[in-house]
Length: 344
Figure (tube, rainbow, N blue to C red):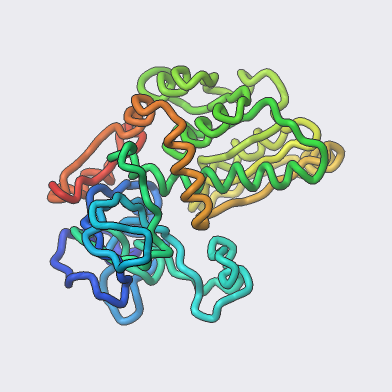
């Protein structure tokens, strides 16, 4: 699965060399690859770029594979399931990267598997350094493909709780905007924390409302239906109006985390002075979050293990074989997580 970033129609199933030992000492047989909007942004809008000196980029950053070879002492054995960490530190490194927090890279010289200057996991085999392979318990099986998106959500909740702890903080309610895989996983972690969770999306019926309700959360199609202030808001769509509306709903000392990214050029006119006064007078906070560190992948594994497996399985709404991988880019309204079967 390769493409020339930013060149629509360039996605192809191409022959690529066997993964180089320089990519890592752990050789992995690829099983599943999750597809998300980032992959489409790479292909259609040039979000990322290929490795230096190469024409094409191997796509894919949501991985699940089985270890074929691993050096002694790495803690990995042939047969283990693993997910690969996406972001790698810059070569300098900056102070954040030097401390294992490449997700907070200060100089922008990081690389990302399948996105930015580093080949992804969309091949039949890939290599990874042991420090960038996260073991997935066998009992999760194919659900291990949710570890990477789960890591982004685990980081969001960590950030929310860190910021909330600036004062006494015992959140009881949360609003999640967007019922895609990130939104639903964010809702899962909110329910696991014992919060009353609202999930907002446009679908009146179908898979998404059903998943939300079966999780024990409340599904709404309008912010007006929330009916109360919320202690936590997680905006997963990148839609400016929803971010603004969620900010207005924050309770005193509430925290809004933005994880959705908009690539549109449209501008949003808001009553900034009114919002400014409301946030200041409430001691409310807004923070952005992107990518994840190793600890967030580990936290995601723990959250998935705690969750109902049948419910998690329903998040994977469609599987496509490798030979038809581009079908995964065409989303239907009821799609949540679409995965490519790299063995197919």
